[in-house]
Length: 316
Image (cartoon, rainbow, N blue to C red):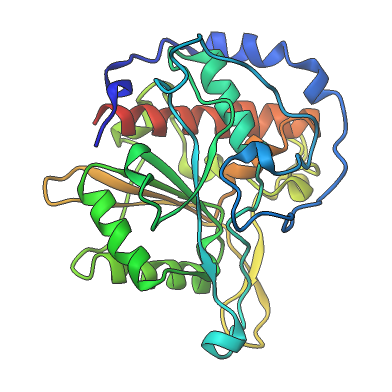
């Protein structure tokens, strides 16, 4: 299951991250065009992130050494079905789509990996269905906004096989108890006998490359609309959480508690890493839209955490 990328060592340090990201002035200094996330024509069949229109500011491009185009790490985003009232009855809680934050988040993170580490990275990324026969070519896959995700029966079987064969799943950007409950229920279909465990800051995944000392609540990443209001010097402007209802017709409540939850295989290998009540994807996608958001959340959390997770997944 693991590719030859597993033996690569990520040569990176906190100083090099700061220096390299500082060089990207044309992203950080231009304001984005706002929230234009949504379906794009061809989303159901697109193979790569390059087929989707960028939504924030222009995403970087690069090439790899001729003849080694396939010897690379690929950001592989999972395409999934979504709960709908017409198919599943009343759905009162919120939730996003499989393509949220794409393609910017996929391509910006891919570029940072290429720029800051020893990994060579696919410049196009991949959109993939769990039932795709090519799934096993990608040792790391990403699911975003699973609060309304529904897995078809063949996808349940495929995901189980993929993870037990050595694959790694990172899940991101879902908020509130109903969204967690839906995701947990879908994963119970994949692994009926397994339950999620909360990871604390002493877990090695948080220091695989960058030492992330916490406390955990300081690693919460808001969506960019909330994040633009953040000020370190003003206690009244330090919100990093979203509000979501817990019950039908109920008031929206603050989702302040960030969790990193994991599923392990029978040999104690971490195979699912779920980032709950936080939005790493906006940290990658929106890096060019606001200086404070970039410094505090993209440079400070989203990129170091993602590099840690990917490095850990590729070496364990």
